[in-house]
Length: 305
Ligand SMILES: [Zn+2]
Image: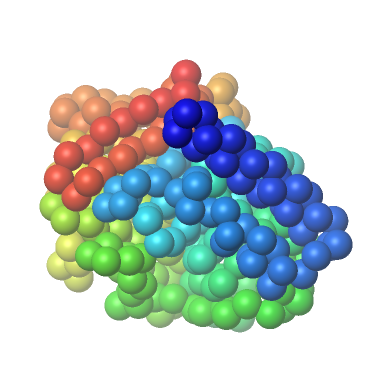
């Protein structure tokens, strides 16, 4: 009897959440009311205490990563233009109806393409992005529309760099390792590099940084060691150098890439290095969504394909 009561409660919670989300997306209810509605039922849907999950969402030749902790939801990048429904549905189906921290690694369309839409569909507490010198700022309408959307949203906006950090709950640290200052004219090299640490387990997120930044990180003695490595630049050979991988020394790697993409990502060289260094890798084109879960000690991996 109790079990069926719980089932009915969870079912009703889901209905409330989906109706609220639809009303919010259509501008019928405010951020505030939406948050009130979902916070009343959110407890039915959040993960078990002490668990951290990292989801590499299958968004084709693009990137979008969800970090889910018992207290916070972080979205790193939004995928390409047109990924908004895939990302929205993915977040909703994982009980995420509010984004605490939305990281924009760098302003290329395969990372910010759906950011404006995501901002219009979810309450977002903070948007964080790298500060790029004016002369290198993109003048694309995509980037400009994104900035207008951020302004309209009235959320906190932070420019982050090496040394910035966020707490994602009890014992869960999220540290920014790059960029720092002027990284030149290649926007990939402004990518936010971040490290998530929980207990003995850590994850390194690299955006699209290339060899030059990997070298800088190595020489700065930043702690890039990790258990799970987000392959740089979709597994390109312009990134993922052997010395960087050896220093990171991960057990697992996740590659965000689209099937038969025009760039040939991930490159053969990267895959050979993963094999040589005995890094077990997953790729979104073959494996679909890749989800790592940890209790701070053990790591589990599940994929959707
Ligand atoms: Zn990219």
